[in-house]
Length: 85
Image (cartoon, rainbow, N blue to C red; front, top):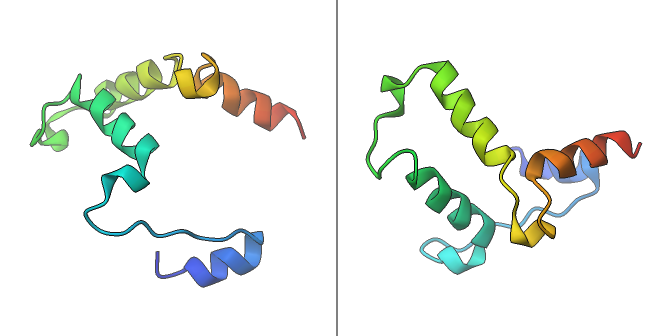
């Protein structure tokens, strides 16, 4: 994130850095880590998995409804966002 100042200037968006050792400040990230653990136990060497296997997991997670999205999937929200413009 060394380019955060340039990003903030280009997008007119603030950048927030969580405090180290404060997982409650990044709830969505921690939730996603938990979902990934259903596929890959902690300490798994991801280089042992093919790109196709990793893509399948990404697709599974992107098609999984989320309570925080009012039970939409991340893929549905992304498509709606892209089609809104």
